[in-house]
Amino acid sequence: MTVSFRIRLFFVAALIVGVVLALVFGLGWRSVMKVELDRLNDRLCMEARRIATQPFDAVELSRLEADVALKLRLGASGQVLVRFEEIGFTSRAGGTVLQSAGWRNAPRIDDLTWAAARFEAEPVSGEGRPRPAPRERREEERGSAVEPPEPRAPPERQPGGTCSLASFIHLDHDWRAARFDAQTGRAVVAADLASVKADLQSAVQRALTLVIPLALLLTAAGAWLLASLSLRPVNRLRNAMKGVTKNALDKRLPSAGEDREFKELIADYNTMLARLEASFNQASRFSADAAHEIKTPLTILQGRIEQAISRSDHRAIQDDLTAMLDEVGRLTTITRKLLWLSQADAGKLALQRAPVPLTELLDELMLDAQMLVTNQRLMGDIARGLKVQGDVMLLRQLFNNLLNNAVRYSPPNGWVAVRAVMLPGGVEVKFSNATNEISAEVRARFFERFFRADASHNSQVEGSGLGLSLAREIARAHDGDLTLEAGPLIEVTLRLWLPT
Image (cartoon, rainbow, N blue to C red; front, side, top):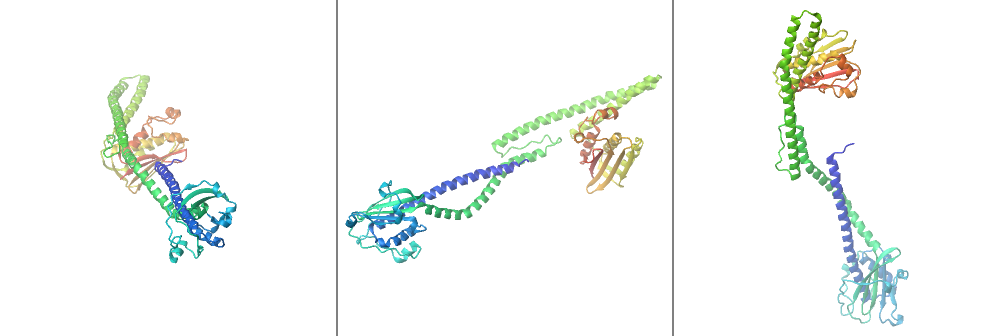
């Protein structure tokens, strides 16, 4: 199955645009993920700083984890790990004051690779902790009714500190941790990146639900527009080629306003057309000149043979001269047909148009054909009052060729039928006859010049193989056509169409 070049170009353009969009989405996802991780790093540092500068009681650890999870925009407190070590806490000798249960299986803090974060700590208030935000704003930021634990009164401490970041794997998940080192102690807050990625993927999927169909629609429209614009010069060239006939070989395609590549293509096409026109004109002139030059000697030869037959008293010589005269007549007929064909090829077949009564012309030819048939049946179904505008001499030649061809190739006890009817816009004449089986390959070459079906035809049936070609050219000169209709292999039907 052949695929349209426009469709192929459309799919190639759509594929290229699709690959570009996929790359854009991929790079965009990485950029968005990086921005989201940077924001998460800042929030982790903020929470670590809050815990380091405002230590809480261990009994409030669960509320603290829930509050940190909300501020980090995580789904549950189990996705957060909190740890605090207070410097100078004598009862624990610097031990852990607060620690989430998940830290028991997590890597040791000192074993992680920490990198300084781009985080600037804000100074705390005179009481040693940041000014709390109004209650309404805190609730809006948290997005739930979870109350943060009240910080216990810390010992006197100095503001400031540094934040460091590290990554580790815990429970087969990627985690991101922030450590804030202050003068009062060290706080570590870790978040499960799986939740962050899941939330971001969900948001992106919701956005792509609208974006992808729109992108596909725009991609298809853009690819189709690109294919149409690319094929526009080709379509102009194709339409111009359709208008090129043997009577219009002098037409040339203009190249003004075309792209450079198509200018080169049009120039090559015009050059090819010029060579074709020169060759065709040369062949047409040769056929016409040869037929014209042969016509005169044949006429003289025919006259001399006729004189020789009338002067000779010898029967055998007269028979030989009569056979020669028949061959000269055959050559004369071939020459006349070649002259007409060459004129038709050059578009110079002169027509003396006048009203032609087809009914009377076909009736006359049927009477003449009745004298040619021996044991064949000749049937006619010709409508009355058929008329066309045309050259009566050429149309007579056309009908005579078709009728003689049907009678000539009809086998013994065969039949020949002629049917003529008036149809909207013109007259249809069908010439049908029974015949020996003719293959599809032979039928495809019916209108080739000098083609005859097989050697038996050449030996048994007279003819030159030009009758059907000439008949079709005469029909086309009258703006009609002659075609071979499909049918049984033992039957031939030629359909002639002539406009009124």
